[in-house]
Length: 392
Image (cartoon, rainbow, N blue to C red):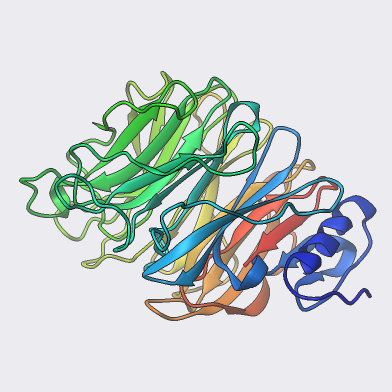
């Protein structure tokens, strides 16, 4: 057992487990039996971790610090040598990020050449759009990887926004998405998912265009998830809001770089309120994994290269308070599903997770840890040694 201090030192020791396979345990990091899953606290008391893995297996982490209504975003990178880079503040305008609601915070993607791209929902301290509305802010790491460029607003016409997602591919396409209505919108029925696209690695963006079918609406206060796979296909998960009660999970798929989208309903949920859900998309060597919440239960499925979907697989046990699922697959074909339990508006809760084999059969009982902070989320990634990391 190795004792380490909190913060980045604890993270670095935890990272060392990736290459050594040894068991390190501390207040910052705990390795479970057989080093299958490493638990990691967000550095420096931060919340709402977002993790991305680059083409070389490097792990990138984005997190939020400060007051929930107006804080800051920070970025660190964990190398294979077990060392984290120094934190870099993402937003140049102080206090321009938001954590309130758990679905409006920073989103992270890795693009061509390992370029880091970040988007987020502007806070009350962010510079507003020309009409005074809340902005969708975007920035990217500079060429020297030493600081982030000044953030830019991407909203031109789809005001009244909420939530957000970002994806990037190997061909220098960057997609920033959010849901919003138009100036004459009267309800969630009128909301749609909007996409701003860059074809030059984030240097410039075209004005936003609608991506979702107008018949579905979009659930206000629910999040989005987006992913561009190795072939450049774009996937988006969101929640509908038809006739107030139809809060179904939808998957948008574009195989032509965001020009057109196919829309598929993954699961129905009739509830006359916004459930404040978030979604997860991740890529493995051969499949796309999608995870979401319905009725307080979390589940996932896989999508192959031809677009065929597996059966929906739920976490073990009945539940009514599971939220914010995330999903990832390791090099052995195992899938980790992690989520929060008992979290809610201005209320923290616990962390839970379960591992499934190649066929989607659970190989472990759900693991649990307490003390997910208020507005907290969970992030996961496969380790190079075929284990998993969970950041919370």
